[in-house]
Length: 347
Ligand code: AMP
Ligand code: TRP
Image (tube, rainbow, N blue to C red; front, top):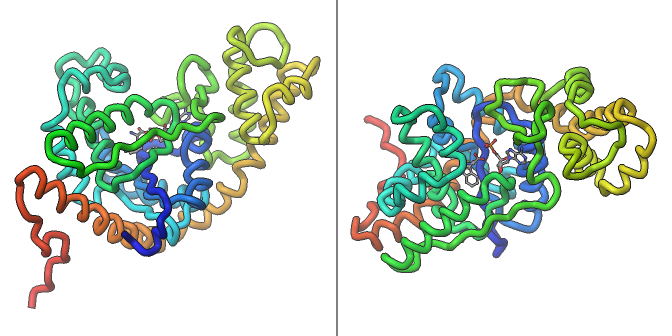
């Protein structure tokens, strides 16, 4: 065990580098990682291999990894206390994925909601990676024997699958993996799109008005909130008949740390436009420090690359401990000590 780990419970979570980080990511995941790293041992990855499941731009991918890392640092992930790295820099993720793919079943992968959504209409030409993506995600977590996986609500099913894979492996080959649990927060675990409250706020949405980006300047942010859809009537109230207001009130309540009931009381009789103006103000102030730190950090690319290099070294060493056991348990044999050592300089 890493000495810096100090007996803290291990957590793992990941975020994709493609598409900018939005308020849903921030409230459902990143902000919680920052809180949890105080009392737990956090391992956080920018999962660039996951980004290859949908068409991507090779000229931009690494920049997107660096930008996402800068945002995580700006949000408060502390690379001294937690491990922060890019997934593609630790080869064990791809290796363990293959072993787990051979244990996974077509039926269980086809049942994944994200597979159903992303493959809709594509028929037989849907990429195989869209199907096997949750196995890569399982490898991410199982490699580090993490006990908890802090994620938003949308990831529950993927965590169930990784639990099944861990149990199946352990039952066949011996107790190599820790069976992880999803840690889904209460508030902010599912933020909906501003322009359609039946859909989650999503990186992959092409509609800029659907999401608040953590990096949006105040005027853009205010405009997006002003144009957010509302429900019929004019009461500022949450409820099943008011999906849009429920979402806006949820955002407000998480950002301000007050209950929805308290907000309903505060805005009683005041109408939507007053409410939206106050909400915009609250979100702007909430995100301001993160955006300002981000702008400073992102200008120093070399420093971000250093953070990623150090993170990859720590992650690779931790992952290798598990891979030694995986190779032995499955009969693949002994992992050579030189396996992760750097290639010697040519003399
Ligand atoms: P992704 O954008 O798919 O890379 O997701 C990164 C993290 O953000 C995961 O833990 C997701 O569960 C979380 N997340 C994504 N969208 C939302 C949302 N609309 N509301 C809450 N959490 C979300
Ligand atoms: N699939 C996750 C998402 O789309 C991102 C992710 C990849 C992840 N690997 C992970 C999350 C491991 C938690 C743990 O949001």
